[in-house]
Amino acid sequence: MWTGLATLPSLMEWTTSQFDPALDWDAVKRIRKMWDGPLILKGIMEAEDAKLAVKAGADAIIVSNHGGRQLDGALSAIRALPAILEAVGDKVEVHMDSGIRTGQDILKAVAMGAKGAYIGRAYIYGLGAMGEAGVTKALETLHKELDLSMAFCGHKNIMDVSRDILMIPKGFAGDWE
Image (cartoon, rainbow, N blue to C red; front, side, top):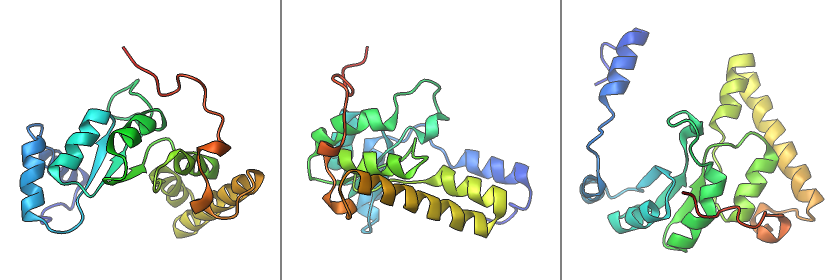
C-alpha cells in the first residue's frame, strides 16, 4: 500500500486516490460493522450530520471545517459547535478542530462543551520553525496560555469550566441562510 511513495507526486497521487466522493452514511455503517474499535468521524459541521453519525455508530465526532481549507467561507467550527452539541447530547463525545491557535481558543471550545480540542496547525508551525524543539515550544506555549486564561476565569482544572465563563453574543450560533 505504501510502496512506491518515495516522491512528492507519488504521495499526492496516493492521497488523492484515498478520497471517495461516493462515501455515504451506509458506507460508515458498513465500516462500523467491520471495525469494533473506536469510530471517530471528523468534519461534522451540521447538526443533522451529527445525528446521522450517531445513528451510523460513531463513538465520537470532531466538529471541523478542516482549517477552512476545503471551502472558503465555511462556517467556523466554534460557531457550529453549539448546535451539534445540542443535537447529540451525551450520545457521543464531541471534539473540536479548526481555529485553535491559542490556549484561550482551547478554553473556549471546552467551555462550550467540547471534550477536547485539536491543535494541528500550532505544532506544525513549531515543527517547521524549529523541529522537535519547536513542537515542544508550541505545546508549552499553548499550555501556559490555557493555564493563564483559566486562572483569569477563576479555574484551576479544565474539567470545571463551563459556558458561564464566556460572553457569547446573542445569535452566535444562529440560523444561516
